[in-house]
Image 1 (cartoon, rainbow, N blue to C red):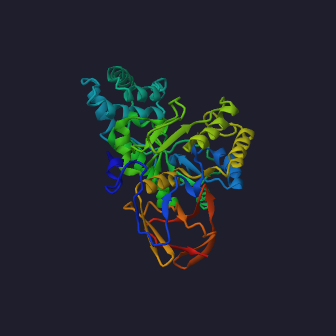
Image 2: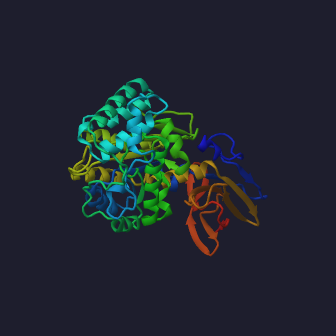
Image 3: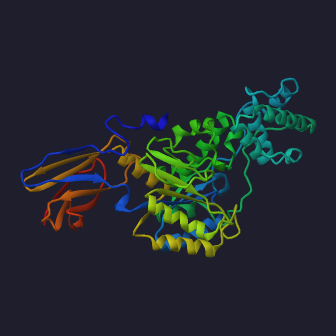
Length: 447
């Protein structure tokens, strides 16, 4: 599997870190990479789907005031100035419809036909087939219920032929409630630390599409994001409707390092939104727990997610949709404000990070080696991994055990020189600091 191939051969057990240690006569030390940045107890990622206007006009200002970065999975076809629009990619539509007169839908041809139907129903708004539910069809395909879907597709194609219209695949602009939200706006928002990520061009249920049309929706969405916002915003994806369709995910995996639909690493225990399981003990190093606050979710339940994440040291991924009357299952401004204030009240325990930054930290930690040497009363610490440095660039938080008489530590890294206070835990003294893997070694000595 894609993620498995990225795991390095020098790793030992899941969660282990190799430490190469040379000990001087009067010094003993040991360095570990902490589970979360700054040694926090948990990580919370605030993610938003669909890019509806009040996410930017209502929720984002609250987050900016609290200095919370968020991840916004956007449908690029809804933003003014996008180059790519939804269409049907493949054979001429009329050729397919003529074929349906004599060839029934089967598992071999059904995805081409559902791709065509989805385009005509959802994008071209053909009224005669408006009653058919593409989300239901997609869900049936995910479950392998091909016989049921094929019967429905035959019925839809028969209806389309009887309209006696000529249908062509043309890239088509879609209506939007994004008044006031432009790519220029997103550039300004990204400069505040927010992540924008792929949610397809047109919020397609990708289980309805064949590979060619899945790739079009994902790649063209990614292209528009890169053109307007840069490469950093092309790393994360959420396939709409939270699909867990292996066929779809296997097509998307090579395109995006970070996928909210699936965490394939064997060191992550993944609990997605549709799973009611509450986190507890696990034999895996990390738990990713996704929860989606809906308009009817009790506030006490929402705050319990935060408390649970701290208790079990997990990665809580919150999935928001509508805000203040706009979007699916919209939350009120008052609820958003109160909830974000509650998270802020736990700032000593929680690292609030974008989806990609949290994932980067986990992968860097699980794939890194710590090299440590001791020489003439000083320690040199270096972290290294073989991950792609174009993607993996987030500092890791290290905790080094130091001699008992080192109350203050001089930290030197390149031209950076500062003094760090040590901390005492039990009978030992430690110093905590950040290091970017494969950067210059850190030199620590008594101050």
